[in-house]
Image (cartoon, rainbow, N blue to C red; front, side, top):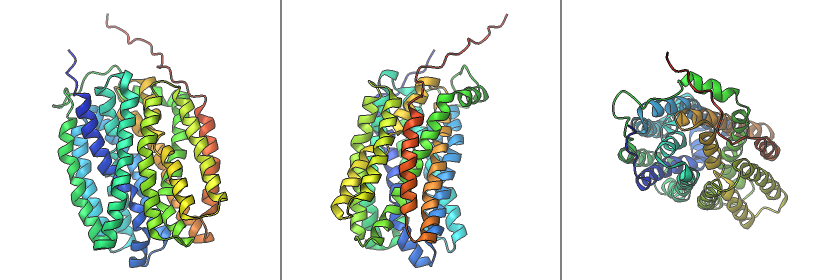
Length: 404
């Protein structure tokens, strides 16, 4: 007998609130780049390297957070992630040297994000919400993360200017603990004890099947590009704009606009994923990103051009998330969705590592971000092309042999 499902309203409300907090806080980390490097006497590469580690750790630990969530349910993973997030923010505020900063802002917060963001929450959505509404529901959750950016980035900017960068991080460490009580709303029936619902495949079988399937590899390649683009822009655009003579407020408003318009972009992508081929949606998003970046670099730079670019990029920002994860669920089913989503997301985070680190590395050596912008354009075209051959139909499996 299958356990009763959680209500869709409860799953979406609690899942969206968790993603709002977790993603909202991390989207504002670029605002700390200059305050921390100037106060500590560090280079931009030092700060960028710590956030690069954060993104890589997020992807790496996301695999295991997904396995645990599939095995024991999301509740325990979310609570543990909230605690790690709070500890990481405290460490980020109080680290006296670059090594400790990399361990706290990098490894701790990366592990925390693995347990409090999309892979875990999408696993609950996949298991608890009817497939006919799954892509739409994932769009709602992704839109919540975008709303978190719109909501939290200005708040973080206000805290930095009002109480200083260290106190701002300590305040956020208390705020992120709200994830723990919200996790109670995502306690899934059938995961209360040490046993999980019976599955047709073991973890090893699910992984072998996925990694032999070309469409899974293509989705991972496309998601790598997504990570490279959004994290490079999110972390380095505030400094890029300041280098060009624009005020810090322009960058804060730009990041907020990305978050605001991404509310609509992710929701639309999730809704369209119920009606159109998801591979075509993904290809369009990556092509459109490449065009938007090229026009931004070509046009004269002004606050207006920045706000227009931020608005367009906002529509495309995390809109890759619902169709990518819904495609994984559609191909492989939901039994191991958090784990498989974690592997796809690990590819995203390798791209994030490269985007944020390469931005700092090339800036310190050339005094410009231009090369990384051009790489982001080329990768956008590449990602669009590799998503077009993805096969979305459920994978054909041989029935399990029956005992004699």
